[in-house]
Amino acid sequence: MKLALVTETFPPEINGVAMTFGVVARELGRRGHVVTVYRPRRSDLPGDASHPEFREVPLPGLPIPGYGLLRLGLPAARTLGKIWRADRPDLVHVATEGPLGASAVSAARALGVPVTSSFHTNFHAYTRHYGCGPLRRIALAWLRHVHNRTRRTFAPTRELCAELTALGFREVALFSRGVDTRQFSPSRRSAALRLAWGAGPGDPVVLHAGRMAAEKNYPLLLRTYAAMSAATPRCRFVLVGDGPLRPALRRARPGAVFTGFIPRGELARHYASADIYIHASLTETFGNVLTEAMASGLAVAGFDYAAARQFVRDGENGLAVPCTQPDQLVAAAVRLAREAPLRTRLGPAARATVEPQSWENVITCLEADLITASGGEPTPALPVTGARACPAPPEPICP
Image (cartoon, rainbow, N blue to C red; front, side):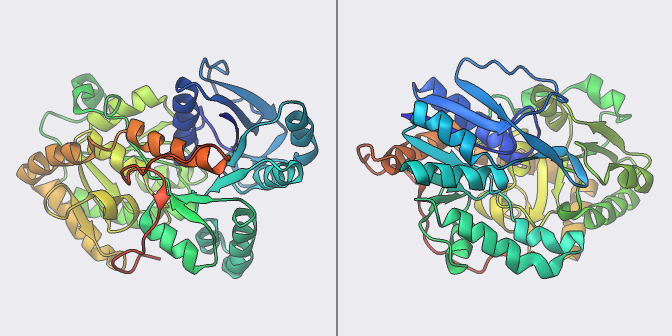
């Protein structure tokens, strides 16, 4: 299959969408597919632009207002149409719904090229975090318009599939997320790194990784950290990543370690050298950081939705609380800070839970669905670890 992958975020940028499609491009390329990635041009991040598994085509883009770490691709229907007329892809897959992604849908449809898409970011839910709540309906209408012009929209959890279907999105299917358990592993724990953080052998280290942005629920995370610190003064806090809120977070938590962006190899070492991961966000479509923390052997606590709903069994391999009960998340975090035996029991169980969720299985299922969408030969049914039709969830999902 000759696949054109269009995305407004891609490695070396560090976020869930970039990481996911970095893996998709690499793994499909390794399987013999011809993969070309179309992304906004940028030269301000380190990284090797040459890859044996896929080719990158940079296109014009601009920094997102108020969030210069990410770029917005500009409309490129004419450019893409010219490229694809000369070298026609079998399928176009659009990973983001910005101007570049939307124009790619239009270009593919104009040429009669099959096009699919995936839903990764709850932009309509973000509006209330940026003082523009009334725009939620407009944002949702735009997302629905973009995705309903494609043959299939992939979403990462059954709950989100059902929610999107109820909101009028058509042909929604499951593309779950894998975790690289070879990269994210307790074996990468580093006593030297813990020492650099000021943590002794028995001091609980609490890690957080992600964009430092308003939609990530940092007020609750900081309240949780304060309660953990009061309960166990030896707690150390490490925040990995960057974003608009970083200066304010440093002022609010001056004793914490702020690493900024780090390479993914170093990220794995940071995870494994910690003990606890608290996931306070309520706007995730999946939450790759949670499964990476579990694979690294951390004791985790989070709200019962998205990745936590899929993988965390409360009290067995982590702690999960109702989305409407932030005080329960604080209480769960305090338990992890206080109870070393609980951490010791939950961490290995978390690792064991996600070990079967390999990217290999997930990509195999996605590959089958993409080939079918491109008009290729249908493939036999595969286990529901990757892309398959989404049944309704057994219980209500979180907002």
